[in-house]
Length: 257
Image (cartoon, rainbow, N blue to C red; front, side):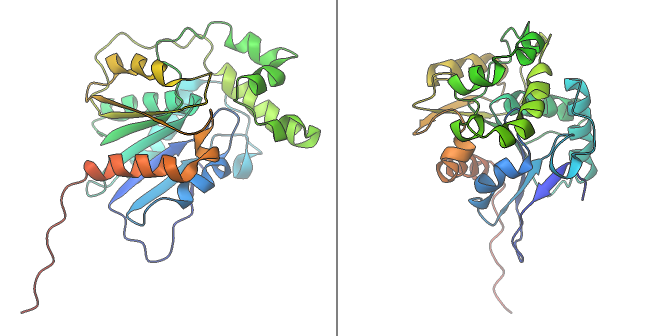
């Protein structure tokens, strides 16, 4: 399996669909473990690991959003199966990476079955100055104030030294990002917000409607900005339910002769 993907599959599972999950900026695949743990047995969850963290710690941190999307799409295509519908999930900034990866897959003739997002920034947001913000001295405190960096990380200098370089690099990836003015993504989209999230409130999810050619379903659940860590069971229930609705019906078991 590619170093880009992390799975925690239970022995004996027979998946009916795959979910490729992108964590929030600065995070690794391990940050999605609790979320993946609540997946039903029929859903094969693969957390996407960007360079410079965990098993890829020896690699340089990503410098280009296009390069991240290229690698993610190629990795997904490398294990594509026509009998396993593919869904993508993204938490916060990971939602934009999932969005661009879905777009890249569609352009290559591999149509995902749906896109699922948690606290996603709008793809039409202006990210000018992202690199300058990421390099600023008060970056960590700003991210904490917005709910994008947990209190326990900010309070632990050792942990902060591990997390902050990847967070800066991932945040800077969106410098100059502009959503292309082409047709909406031809997929159904589920977008979820936490009722205590001041950074990405429920009302902001409507900004995804023009980008959701297959229709937008917007939901609000209890929690803050990082729902995949805060309320993983409730979030996975929504994501899995959305996916299940879009799976082909299973043929009834044959009666023994």
